[in-house]
Length: 308
Image 1: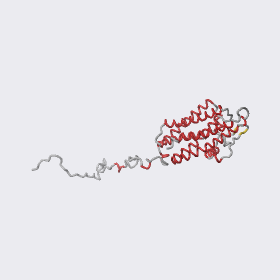
Image 2: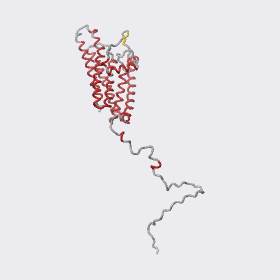
Image 3: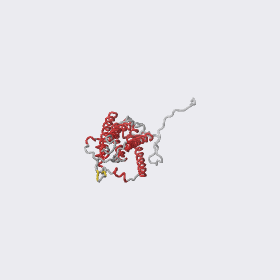
């Protein structure tokens, strides 16, 4: 007597019969051999679900210096900020003075720029520091390597902003506010230095042929040393930073003393008449030395927080 089976009854799996070769196949049967995701190549090419490789997650170094997305974004933002600032400065300058007066300080060429950079980094090898004149008019920087210019200080200032953004991006400290603070601080120090020089020359009644643009140029040359110091610090660490800082400091001090000496001290003979003329050369020397000593302080102030 067969008892009723309650529940499921095990059945033998039946193989699906293949369609006859003679009959047309309306739909292809793919239920019995469904390939997995890996066989269809869903993850074989395209997005990597396992994350980036380990060799790109290391600390800052030579590989991360230019491949870090944060540093790239910081450099792009710094470039746009510098270009926008340059447009604003040019617009404001055009309101108060003729642009033709600035053409003298931007009359440079590649040969002048290369020679000037060599003098800024290796001033000890330069012998002739005299500024040449033609009919009481100083020659343009293109014609005289000793003439001050504004092209190198402007480009060096913009490069400093870009390097500051890259350094902040590498250290994961980049933000538009921080980069704007670095740019404004650097600009304010140039303005303060130029104002102190103008006020000192006026109060001490020191007559010289130094114009405001000359002082801006000599104040902006320090950014060449700042760039050199920051690059060495980013590539070689703290040891390279301090070595580059020492070299840049002595180089810019020597350059400022020799350059301002030809501008300030050579006009002593024109002030030799009158009372107190014997004290004038000492005052001029003090101003020249004080300006030179001030340069390394600013270089350290603007680079120490960016190189760690």
